[in-house]
Image 1 (spheres, one colour):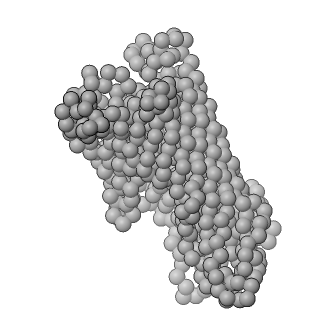
Image 2 (cartoon, rainbow, N blue to C red; image 1 turned 45 degrees about the horizontal axis):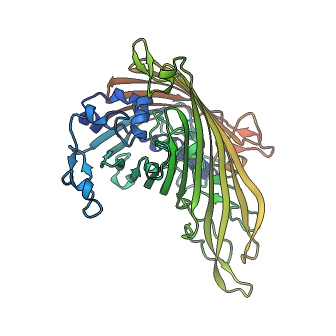
Length: 518
């Protein structure tokens, strides 16, 4: 990869920290409906406490005695007697008594300690020619608009919940906006099959995968590196085409159906999702005498599969408190002391189509269907206001290579990466959250393609590590300011013949955010 492209990669990497920040959705509409504070369900929005997890599990209703707590009752779509007349009439159902609409906006400011721009200064970058335009570099300081989002959620009665959120603009541009989640969730339908309570629930639509720790509703300013990691292999020496170009990452939204059961606040929890392939990406450079490859597509006859299982051990001494929605304490309800252990697995197939040649030299379309999987484990330990949690993931892509004659494919060495994160947060005061996080990604193939910052102390340079302390303050229950500083290893834009970095520098970043939900 040339130097200009390396700089663009580094620039893009830092900008992604801003653009891919988790969509922090709390639902102030629920506060209006129940006449309560956001802190009833959230510790530091959008992080849920145990009651918030139970509220979500129950289909956006109070887990016990919902009718007793609701201040704005729902509107019934028909007479109550219609329930007894079904199936000869439409089952009445309900809609919320007020529009379940909320808004969210955030604004960022970042400071970057070192980068290619301030290192090279007025020097001509290696590999550039006179008169050529230089690629963008990282600004030292920058204000950045974040998300302006609209979202709504609620319950239609009969344990049918809904959620829709849409980013109207991202980074100040409406064209960057997109639908986040949009689904119907049929809660506890296992009761029709005489299954235990909440043993079987179905979700249909577009949604975030049931990740051990959410990316879309994370309290962190920057995303988890392992969730954003894609698998891009080294180029095939025979023709210059990449051996793997799988753009899928675990944070990607999914479209399909999810079956789940259990509870997030104690005991077992499982989910199994069947979703569309999500493997879009740019085309590779074309070999001689062959047309440019087409874009990436899904196979309509194949679906990806994601599964998760976890078990949470509530460790309260009092049996009644241990099995209740929230633990009891001297100052009132609080989160349980617990240990949660889990595992997850994703199996998919990356599809890439190329314009190739038949044995007789005629043009034809060649389709590479490349199996891949992601597997990992996670844990979470909580003691009162302290939470320590982490995740490890291993990724494996089958290496399908286009042959030198451009007439078919063969298998090469699999392309892999692994890594994860470890995070601790501590609620020092009800309105002050302190955070410390370590991210690690090990991917030699990324380094070979210039997508990894590299490690100054390793000639291979295949690892990417980040240490991120942060602090967040609730100005009000629905207004928050956050600060984060990202320590990254030394990196370089060029290397000598022995793989040693030349003119290495650090790209540490301080980021502040101000956001509100309404």
